[in-house]
Amino acid sequence: MNIAVYPGSFDPVTNGHLDIIRRAAKLYDRVIVAVLNNSAKTPLFSAAERVELIRRVTSDLPGVTAEAFDGLLVSFAKSKGAHVIIKGLRAVSDFEYEFQMALLNNKLCGDIETLFMVTSSHYSYISSSIIKEVASLGGSLDDLIPPGIVGDLLEKLGKGRT
Ligand code: COA
Image 1 (cartoon, rainbow, N blue to C red):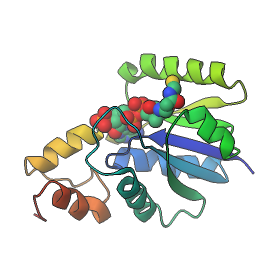
Image 2 (tube, rainbow, N blue to C red):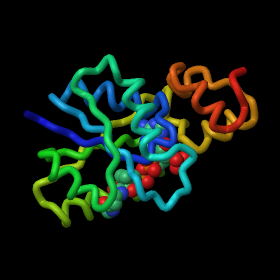
Image 3 (cartoon, rainbow, N blue to C red):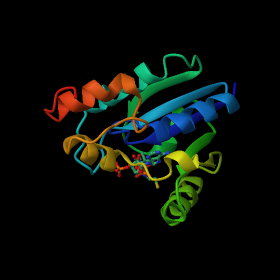
Image 4 (tube, rainbow, N blue to C red):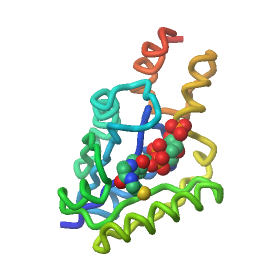
């Protein structure tokens, strides 16, 4: 079975992430969306909440699962029998950092390859932080995050549904 891990903070999952997940699901038998638990960032949603949101928006994709992890990404991937890490590239500015992480992960575990997928141009400007800012300022979240989680985000920000 070909298993890939798609790691990130997912605070919260966006349409950009979902685009990568859907496309990766066509390439691999199983895609494990790996939610970083001990991020240096202070997350809005707990790791368990972020996992639940991802499970909800990927419920139509039988090969996709989500779970939280901490520690080294390569250790998590190995423990799941995955040999591929998928990362999305939104712009050239993502590349330097991603390149460094891919080389480091390969140094830590030579069996694991990083596969970069180019984010659809439609989503290349999206990040979780920018979406939280739009939501907190009352802007429309149409096309930015899956409709099924808009209520969760607004509630978390104390905004209620618009
Ligand atoms: N669509 C929309 N947004 C995207 C995106 C996409 N396709 N791809 C990335 N982003 C955004 C995220 O929303 C996030 O935005 P934010 O900063 O506003 O929250 C930003 O890009 C960064 O992504 P993030 O998910 O935080 O990932 P990262 O590139 O910082 O790496 C891990 C996260 C989990 C892969 C990394 O921290 C890790 O591997 N940690 C484990 C510890 C470890 O093994 N360290 C050694 C590895 S080098």
